[in-house]
Amino acid sequence: QVQLVESGGGLVQAGGSLRLSCAPSGSIFSNDVMGWYRQAPGKQRELVATITRGAATNYVDSVKGRFTITRDAKNTVYLQMNSLKPEDTAVYYCNLERIVLAGKYAYWGQGTQVTVSS
Image 1 (cartoon, one colour):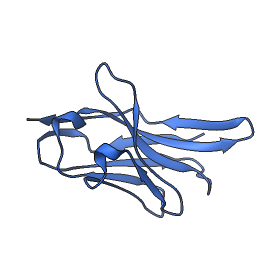
Image 2 (tube, one colour):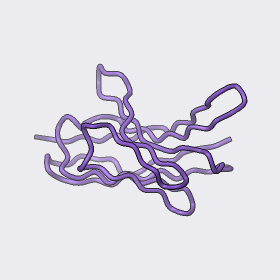
Image 3 (spheres, rainbow, N blue to C red):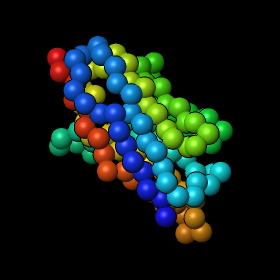
């Protein structure tokens, strides 16, 4: 069983920065992919960024060049968010995706609110 504990959300003005952290507990496997998703009011949850154990990254187009995802030796995942825009306002969820015999299984954090004021 994996638990993901997020921190770092808050209120910031447009153009500002925030850093989110996600600390996992439990066994992390070499093929686990970790990442961040977000969900704005009235919208579907969307992928923001992912990172593999080997540090391969993937970003949604809207955050490329502004957000950076990193992962340390303890598998804590960080999302550095710069040049924030009001449209980045959402609840951000940490995610761990694991390949299992039946396919894929996802673990989720509790979510952290990011609010960007104009």
